[in-house]
Image (cartoon, rainbow, N blue to C red; front, side):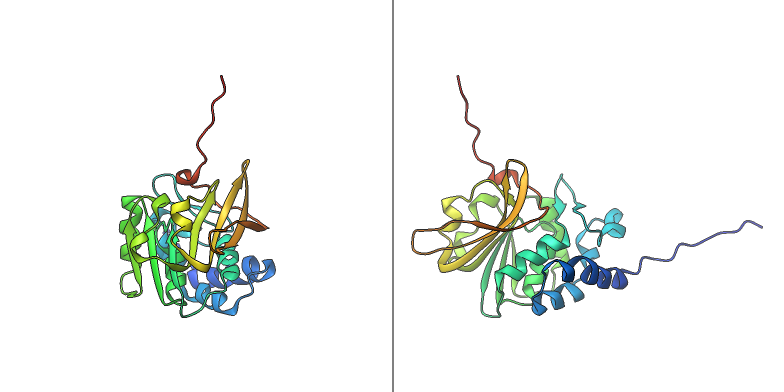
Length: 223
């Protein structure tokens, strides 16, 4: 007789609790509303099937087409700094497979999630089905979605080298924008508030967040 062994399925609920206690709480993810959302949102539903065992590691998780699901710590810190409330209209740029959109949907009034990759859009729509306050839009990331502007909050879920004026124009006066910033290969999280025509991003935390090619500065040439 040949012995056979069946591997037990991963305990994702335990992994989610471990993520909160070992990755988030010790690292300034302190907003109880954000913690509560991350405690109930099934991160494993937002990665490809082959990557599900990696859903709760403390690093980026590979998605399709060279994109990644950013580390939970980066997402938690962005959402904590966002000071989320139930009345906000939020534009999420680089929605990926929809994880950050799902977190937002349980907290804010309305989420418009923009993604430029067709496969990721389809994954996001399937994973977010039933969340009536989320709209997934397939569009160029750097264009945002002006049709539903102005937004109280804009989150760019990745590191940028520049924020186009077209995106800032979609932010309500007094509204906030949060993103990663890519400074010579070093990633930081940053936030800024629009005050009339004035806007600037100010870094607030050093952490890993994947760069977004759509927001790279044009290369300069010397002769």
